[in-house]
Amino acid sequence: MEKTLVILKPSAVQRSIVGEVVSRFEKKGLQIVGMKMVSLSDSILEEHYSHLKEKPFFKRIKDSMQVSPVIVMALEGLEAVEVVRMMAGPTNGRKAQPGTIRGDYSVSVQENIIHASDSPETAEAELKRFFLENEIFNYPSPAFVNLYAND
Ligand code: UDP
Image (cartoon, rainbow, N blue to C red; front, side, top):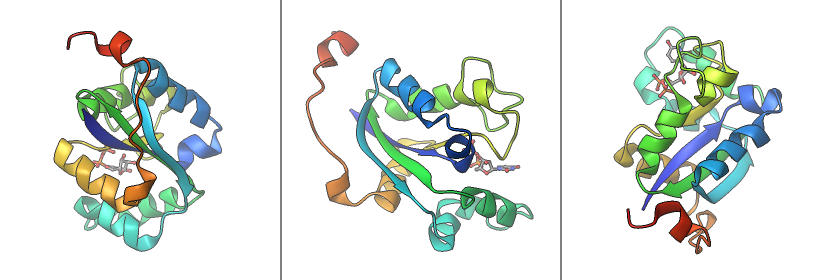
């Protein structure tokens, strides 16, 4: 089992599609093991988007992540990191396939609805960044057998 971090960005919160997006993950079979609303500080965003810190558009991205609170989620499943990245689609909503979250809800590079961890290593670091240990839950999934059979 693997855990991954999803952030429902202000573009999801402000357009009132949080429920729809969360529902997609639930329907897919990912287990919600952590979820809360938070306002993101400058320092957490500088750490989270450190790979973009030198880009001219960094301030624009940071500002857009602070327009409203966000929802952070921890999702668990087999190969959850890859599954959730595929559900998100590529960064640019205009290029994302219909059927992906960005493809269905975004026409923007920046306002692309969700963040999703891009590797198991990143997921581990990002979950620690946004959640305390006691905010991630370990509980049985009644649907487990139906979801995975003998995988
Ligand atoms: N972003 C942007 N312009 C760019 C690249 C990225 O506005 O040219 C924003 C966009 O919201 C993206 C986030 O910065 O989701 C993080 O970028 P990254 O390259 O890590 O893409 P992601 O992993 O989110 O697809």
